[in-house]
Image 1 (cartoon, rainbow, N blue to C red):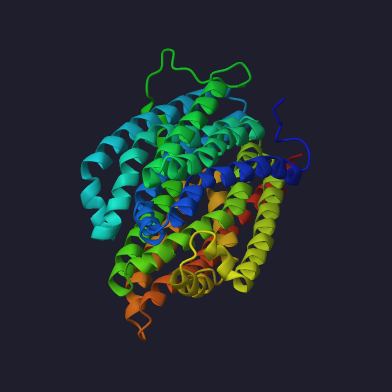
Image 2: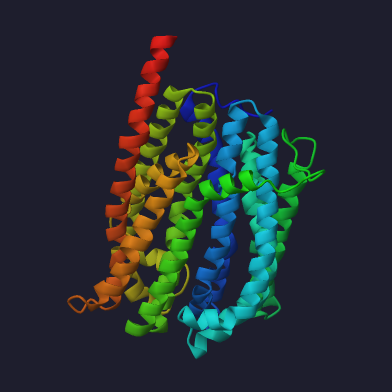
Length: 456
């Protein structure tokens, strides 16, 4: 039975959504994390191979950016229409979202195949690391459509009140990846190619699972394309709201490109490999905050559509507090035990020694990411795309990119200036995003609660 988000304590609804979504996020991250762990321990080539995979990060992130654009962009609109009782409109939103995902996946696959060599060298590949990056990407790109559909459409499963089904979508695929990785990488001696093949097979399994559910009997709003014609207005609304997720992911790709290119100048392949490890650690610890925020969005959107503004406030307060406590704990753990997280991916002495120092710098002020996620997620959940877009750009493009280029030249910081740009952006960007949300959204919700109280 689906959950009615207008009933029961708000915090319970959020937790009920967040736990399966967090597990799903965790398992989803395993797709790439497990690849990096195994590749980082390849005999005789672990460091270079890991760096080569790191060079492909901006491409993988770009695919994720378009997935968020049309998947996460449609889901809040879908939830708002469900809350307002317009299931026909909700269905049209889901169908247009799926159409946009399929079309974009095909375009991206062809384009990236054509220009991948030029792209990889522009992203910081050397002659030594290009071999591994190219080998991985040649196979990985075939899974683009499966990845975009499984991730992009999975939100519509959870938004209908089936978060456990959404969790299973990625669990089945990720388990397949975990099992196949060692078999193909080491058992069959396929190395980097084996990791890519395992990932594509896993993505395909996840895609089949989520699409089968959405067209099946259990889905409250079924996905079908009978008589379907793309709706320009709906596509525009999906794109507008999803633009914040797109810009956040695309700006992450931009930062990765700038970081790799700058590190190749000041530190070389060693520090690009270290940045690959740092990005992996960040992905692992970000998954809980993302699970909480993605879990809260359907509840906030539903209650907002149902004009339950007091419940919207409760949801914002609870999710922000929970994320703040969590990120503070993470910051303390990383400060005390940095080497443990580096050794997960590689045991080479230089990577462990310099990686631990970089990790201390990179995660300084991590608690402020809770403020960034809270403000950003609230704007998206309530359909305020312009605010969400601005703060996505502000933290990454306006703060991180310039600092990444400038700080290495200041006081002989060199590579450490690259790692220092991230914590500065966390403090400034996170504070700005949350403050703006409180001034705009929170104050307006207070007014709406008061007006509703006087008329009731």
